[in-house]
Length: 442
Image (cartoon, rainbow, N blue to C red; front, top):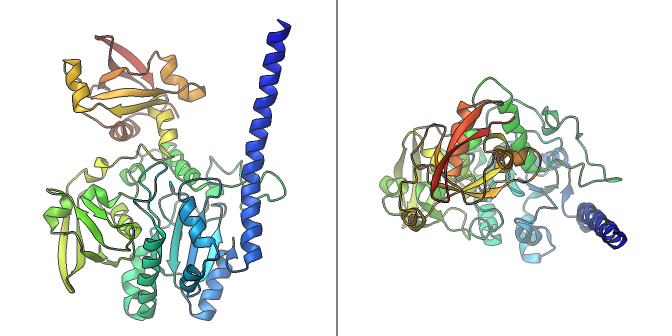
């Protein structure tokens, strides 16, 4: 008994020390970033208003980079951009450069982007007009297919060309600023205002005082969830990737299409590999993120005008998107999908069965989803408490028996159910069908 108790105490001590070390590391990362960048003296640090004023007085365009320091995604690109590399600095010196490492105090009407990112850039005129965005993410950790240093520098070149023609193109840039946000700044969201202020606490737990970008996305979800209206589709499926259109963009170029999937919406519209996307939705395009901005603000069914440059000539195209196009996208990789699982699947992580897996079952699989993971703690353990197990095959959910993705399950249940509801789920386990109840949570 004494040995067992001692072992437990040692394990608890080691665990506490490990947690403390992790916290210390995160805090150190944030403090070291500020010290390093300020010591270098090139970037304006955490002061966007100062950057706007300097851009206005110098006539240079403004670059604002948002970076979540403890997050690993896009760390390599961030390091390449911020380090004192002469070839990169040559390009950066053409801009007034601002580095912001937190979302606290962020103007949500001005800085609208995919908040599931940990690195995002805005290019602006000194008067606040947005030239474009850079930063795309479509995977939980891998980023090389979406962002590269070469692609970033290519985008900077496109921005500089727009800056030279500012008076000519200014009216076409108006749509790059979105509708006013219903909440002015992140710390004003009900879910955040008791925990955060507009500034970081560099003297204390600085990492814990920081609002991460994905927390802004979470806060929007909870804000809509607490209202009377269903969560909008653009909030559930934000910033659709061009891949949804069948367009594979070249990450080492600002606006070049590397591949067009056959029979896709992009192929039907007439896009071709090698095309440079010059305009999309009537807006000058400087990056893949700019295309996502247009798609994010498109209607449920839409026609989007595009201008591409092909062999030195410009061609006008019309992209036609059918009703429900947005929901063909995948949101399961997003950090903001974590609270969605708590709300509507009781913490269950779901995956679509492969054709081979479904065939091996030898019977109709309906919804065609398998329980990949089962949450173990707090509200994320609601599915576990309801009796669900890993590898359960979901054949029917809330009366629906047609194939659905996890993302489509999120959308359906968020739109049709409220906290406190319970839905019937039919699962196949050990060759037998059984009916179970899954709670819908706040």
